[in-house]
Image (cartoon, rainbow, N blue to C red; front, side):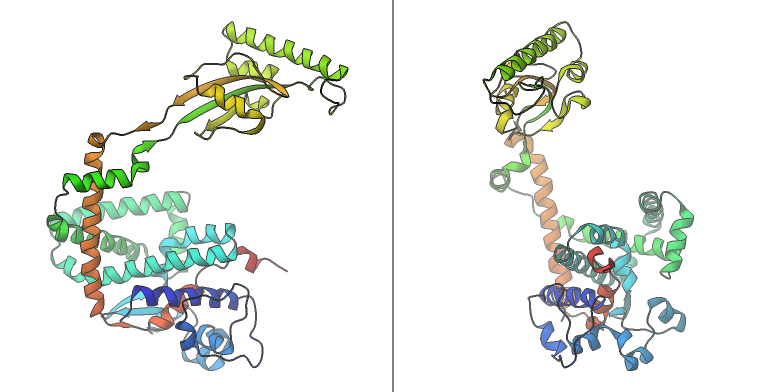
Length: 419
């Protein structure tokens, strides 16, 4: 029986072994049992060489005998009508490598280019495991769901499938249907197959929801209260303030920065800074926009942006800007402070939108909590039902299949860059 634990263990080993296999060759004399490796719950370190047996199990391209026994790619196997290692059989239903990889390909490509290898390996393990379980679950339930499909639901599924596919074309292929169809051709799929897969996924989800929604009990008030207390952060909106700042350092008018505070040059420069900030305040009091005044007078790092620092969270600013944080606490939206005299600069603090910390009351949150607990109850019933189905499921070619899935995953950028 395929369990979640065994799935995670096998994936953790294969992610490392297959991606490493693309970058190095095994050294002579290294031998270990691939089956024994699969029993370990700890993945190998990124960058280590796989053993010879692992290469035999996981890199058919380097083994002539295996290469002659089966085609290398999924598309070639389809053309020949063969069922190879890159197909998982669940109760006679086929799951292909592209069924697993295609829905998450864009996210994986982005992760491969941006994540360090170890983090990417964990990310791949999690995403692939989720996708495999999703595909297995769909195969286990689909026939039952299909038997209860009515004409009205057929029309709804068709319309929703088309909407989802259009959204994917817009998001991943710049709205160009031809690019999408070209991509499908490269992986051996048609638009009709994608539409059918989308319909199946929605049909299974709808079937499970309808099967169990009446079995989820209503939450009691004590249950609602316990959730509210233990998840208080979900019902709290943190303080957020749009900050603008005029920042004029005391040494801004010195010919040579870094003179000792209190020196004649430093004091003269501070006086000029005082005149500058006084002029800025006068313009603000006369009704000029804060951003215009900041652009004209501020010497700080965001002067060219109208003094805008963006949105500041409840933790505020520290160091030389700590008095800025203190001033923000007393300002409402679209206000400004008086002149603030710090250790090394004059400041005027301005605000855009100010949102104070808000906590939703228990009474206000009850309906939302009911929905959350109801969804959790529904998911638990579905999970128990699917686990029962998997107990008696006949899953074939699992080891070979999970190796092929990982081999189809883009490797981390650091492993493909020229050395």
